[in-house]
Image 1: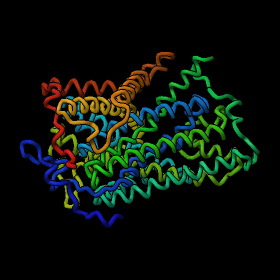
Image 2 (image 1 turned 120 degrees about the vertical axis):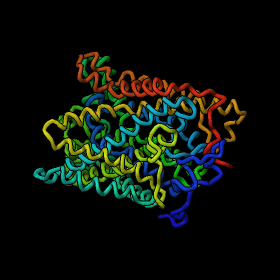
Image 3 (image 1 turned 180 degrees about the vertical axis):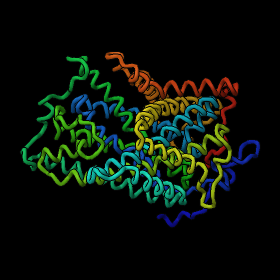
Length: 512
């Protein structure tokens, strides 16, 4: 815990006043407290990003695209993440507010865009909180299948709801330790993988044998080069899902001490940390586990499906599955902790821009938005749907709605940044005067926007190869819902796009 940050440290009063002199609730002098340091932001983002997607989902990705196809997919999506993080960094350091990009969408582009984007993103994280609670119960069942997951859903729901009511600096410390376990595990696996690949395991020296047999690329759905491309593109989508959460570093900007200094540092370290850990893990998994290994595609949710465990079993290290299962448990619990935090701050941002009820902005003496935390946490109770006979089907559909919310968010962040740069130019403000300057602009932002939209439109392309109505809606229901929210809000409130001259870049602006 950082003693240099007092529990009551708050946003500067001068930065919390709009041009009309009205108080801005997301960073006001009696609202959220700036109790986070750079390293807290990094670990909140890492906690929300590194989870079951990497520890479990990477196995199926390896089987679908092969070791080289999977590695290229994760590197390429990493470049998209770099674009998004750079765009977000430039805006979040200049205007550090809770709700971050949902606030930017309302102020820079269109209030309807902020409404649709914010609610989709909030629903994504709140339902994901329920998913992580279910996953925690299933992981514990690895040790004792007779246990009812409802017990653990209830226990963990209470624990993480309570943690999110704590002062923000305490929350940051808890999340830092949770996320540290995952980082140490990945580093430990990399060292383990180097040893096994060099010949320590029961199979002797491996080298790049798995890249030649069964081969660098795997065929998916169809055969030949087209099958290899289909496999690669499918994993491109999976890689995007795995990286989602990196943008959480922007959500905490409104509660960060000295944001002009700490947010840029957090953005840089978060990007390089997450991408290097992901790429290194995928690289070494591809060396140790042949892509045609049957266990990669069994579809279970405990340690038996993890490529890290499969690699250990192939090397003859039987004790590792229990260790990995314990790490998986901390991974989903850490993600659950971040889910409630990010969801509640998105609600604060929505309420600030009048896209949600105003009472959600209320905070206690510690600066915790208790109504927003309570509403977000309540959605986690949907986890109990898995206890009923047909509830699992309902729960799966809710998850389908959230499936590509991250790509929608990333696309909107890019759009916001393009408008932000235009607004700066119209005001005669040089980007070189900003606390953080995104590189290769505007080309890097256009690059990220193009591929995010392309992945959004093609994420369910396999249903057009082998048609399935249910799979079509599972792939595109979130995009459809986003359009419905946007158009519906615009029809009801008759909103118009914000003119460049009217873009608000003064409220909550960092003074330096």
